[in-house]
Image (cartoon, rainbow, N blue to C red; front, side, top):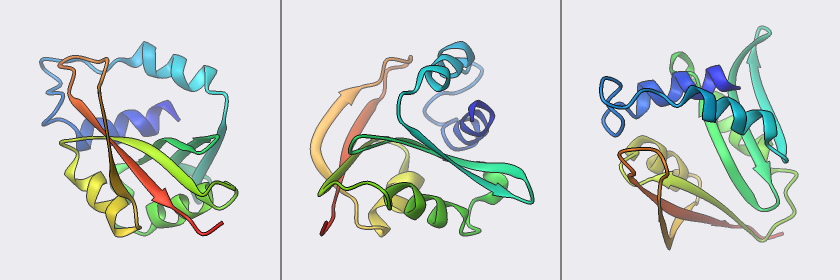
Length: 137
């Protein structure tokens, strides 16, 4: 899980967290995965992990696909599988304001900004934007 998140983050967020200025927070991210209380969904391709999604209550807490599988449909399948068991009318997530690729992905699937924002704890402390997905359940 850590390796998937790290690969996706380094490839997709270098414009937010330039690696030469802000080393990836390996220890904090490993701890996050080790103590995550919710459900973790793993996407595999021929037995190799290629994507991970984490849900807890009515939140999508993490969603990452290795860059080599971007655009292959893995993310679509993982997204739907992670949300399917949630019995929530509204599901929420946080996404970096400057993560245009992720924001487009979510918006194509019906997610919309919900007006919430927060400052991310990791330097340079960018802004997270809250998104909600309203479901008919």
